[in-house]
Length: 210
Image (cartoon, rainbow, N blue to C red; front, top):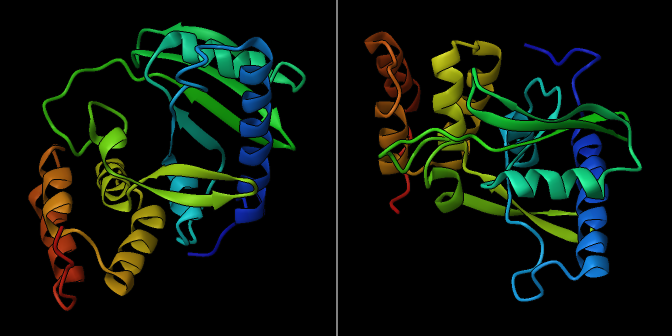
């Protein structure tokens, strides 16, 4: 399971993210947007979130999740000097307000995900990404990156072994939150054999408590 030539490197993700966030900070300061709250809150998700946490897996773009459509527009304004590949648009099929820009040759996607869930362990919906994240240095910034347990559940649901195998390798080596992982897996309609496979791969490691 090697990375192909089109897969992003950590340096690619860091460069695109740093430029994006620096532009956002400059816009916020220039326009005095909500002086008490600063720039819009966001989370880094998708494969780029895993790459930033040291998991070597195929990564094609940078995914930023925000909670409001006006936050998507704010990011779009901040990136207005970069090529716009997809203007801010409501996509009813996926319940997303979405835009895509190219930053240093990297596709940066910003979107809402406007679907309801009672689970606290979904990668892109509900409170999960806002509650379960880690801060990763990225140039002059520290970016909130969604936890790997949530990303693993997404990749298992999509049945992408070239993504979930490196995640399992990383978790088995570095540890994981067993309760969070259980909630993430049960929040998804995963087939029983995939649950069993995860248990088998991680049984030899004692998970950290949370």
